[in-house]
Image 1: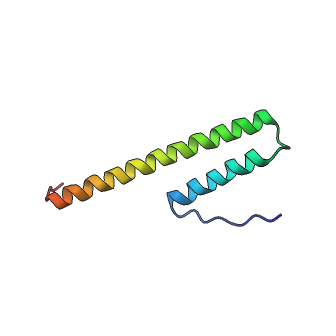
Image 2: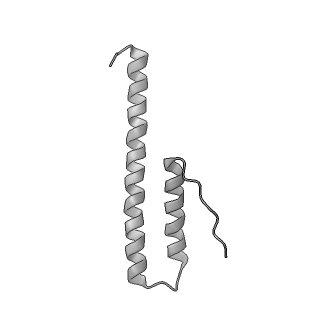
Length: 74
């Protein structure tokens, strides 16, 4: 089975790839359960951090837009 290259241009691309890796690990019954759990836990932590960062970025962008609309200067 060949593996396609993945474009990682945006944070959403990275999150999608990590989610796919987690799903692939979950499906792989031949892996050691302890190692699999550790890998899934580590990837999940990275995924959650990425999501939180993305949420904060969106909030900052909304606040900036509101401030610009209100005429508040830096």
